[in-house]
Figure (cartoon, rainbow, N blue to C red):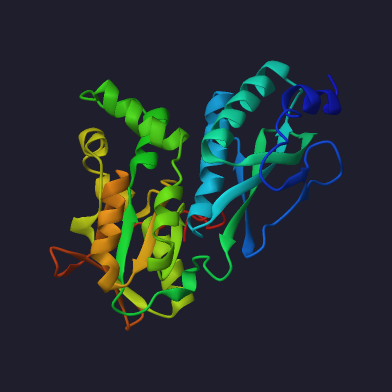
Length: 325
C-alpha cells in the first residue's frame, strides 16, 4: 500500500473544524484566524527508543502524542484549533495505522482540535511529530517572562507520576504493588491530560506559565531566567499521588522535582489572586497547589521544612547532556 492510499484510508476523514477552509488533500491547509485572536504554534516529537518503548500500542502513542502537544497550548492559555501530523515508520502497516488514527481522531475530538494535514515517510524507527495551533485573544497569551517578585508558584495535578509509570514498564514491579496504582501511573505516562479548561479560566490572573515536560526544577528555571527573578520552592508542599508513594517511596521527591513528562502546568500568580485561583481549580475538580514564591534575588532555593536547603538535586531532562555532566 502506497503513501497516498495510507493517507486516504487512515486520515482523510479528519479535515473539518472551526476555521478550516481547506484541510487534508492539498499541499497546504487553508485556515482562518478569527478577528481579535492570535495564533500560537508548537511542535512535539516522539522517537521510538527515546520517548517510548518498541512495541507500544499505537493507540497509546496517539494519546500520548496529542496530549503532550496540546499541553503546550494550555501553557499559553490558548484554545486548541488545528493539528498537523508527521509519521515515520519502518514499513507501511495498515493495521497499526488504522489503530493509531482511530485513537488520534478520538483524542483530537475530546480536546477540540482538528487534524488538517501532515506527512508520512519511511525511516529506521517510528517517529511521530505533532504540530499544534491554538487561538488566544490578542495580548493574552501566557509567557514565561511575566513573573514578578511576590508571585506565588502553583502547580496543577500531581508530580512524578509519569516517571513512575515509565518505571513500571522498565523494571520488575515492587512486590507490594497494587494493580490499581500501577495502572494509574501508566495512565499518567501514556495519556497526558492538558489543563485547558483551568488555563482558560485563569487566563487573566496568571503572570507567567510553562508546562512541566522536563521536570519542575528545569521548567521553573526557564520562567526564572526569562523573567529575571528567583524563587523559593518548598519540597514539602509538592503534590504527589498516593500511587507514586505506594510504589516508589524512595524516589518520590526526586521524581516530583525532576521526573519529567507530567505535562502539568507551573504558574506564577499574584499573591492577591491566589485564593481565587485555588477556588476556580477546586470548582473544576483540578488539584492546584501552592509550592513556593517568586523572589527578587535570582537563583532557585529548594527548601525542606521551611529552612533546610537541599543539596545534590536531580537534574532535569536534557536530550543532549552527556552522561558525565
